[in-house]
Image 1 (cartoon, rainbow, N blue to C red):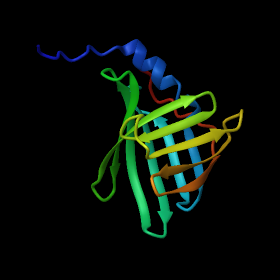
Image 2 (image 1 turned 30 degrees about the vertical axis):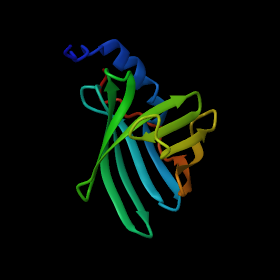
Image 3 (image 1 turned 60 degrees about the vertical axis):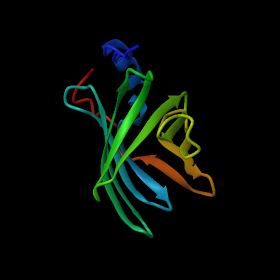
Image 4 (image 1 turned 180 degrees about the vertical axis):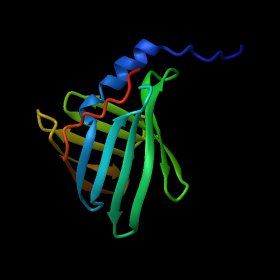
Length: 151
């Protein structure tokens, strides 16, 4: 029995990506790795792109992340390309005001969980993994009108 790839469901992709619209904009990150992140639509709207500029005691972290719809899993998957050449995969989920970002898939014990205020202007949360983790804050710097495209 051969496994056939699932056809791309553009409407499902649009619905899922729109759940992340509250993230659009530039955020100041506080905590152990301060800096800024910016979420914006890709030009054709099929992806949300995150630009990352953080600093920690281990040195600077720079990278770009592409978040899109995965038809096979019906989830929002991302690929993070670090400035040092690492390629990491995550799964995003925003339920109400709770943002979860899992390293790999949703069964991973390594994840970020944060809670936004009702207006999506700030968030507190943290990364956690077996044996470690750290807390972060996010504060919106701009209004988030980064709609350069639509799905």
